[in-house]
Image (cartoon, rainbow, N blue to C red; front, side, top):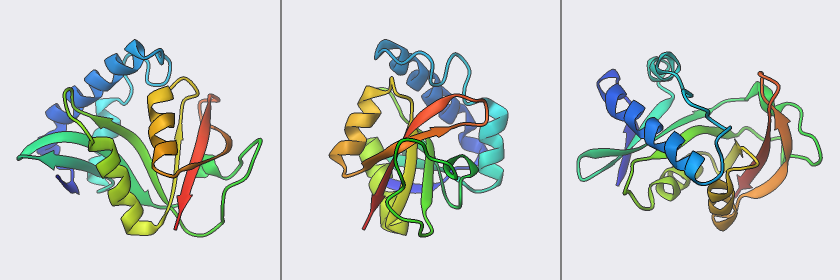
Length: 161
């Protein structure tokens, strides 16, 4: 597998991966995190134009997608019920999803991002048990709860070298 920046030509496959991810999350008891239409196409197009959306390629096929940037996330400024592991510069991962039938894609993407910064922050919905399990398996530590701009809460994790 390899990672590259997403291009506008990838948009249809990216949106189909997100369609599958929403369906998978609902089947796993997590219908609320992305609802019926998140992330919207316009948001993904904006992520691509900012060069912050990446795709995972396996055998010349796009099998995964994620937002990654080395930036301060405003929703991470306040954390309740805990604390971040450090206050050093960090990378963020959002909107990670893998194609139907793919294996090991999320792990590969998370590992790739960690190799680039050595300090990653990520959040997920309390109902997203598969993602929580993966994060814990990969050494991410639960740090507390954050609140998104829309007022919904997420549980936050961090991994440091």
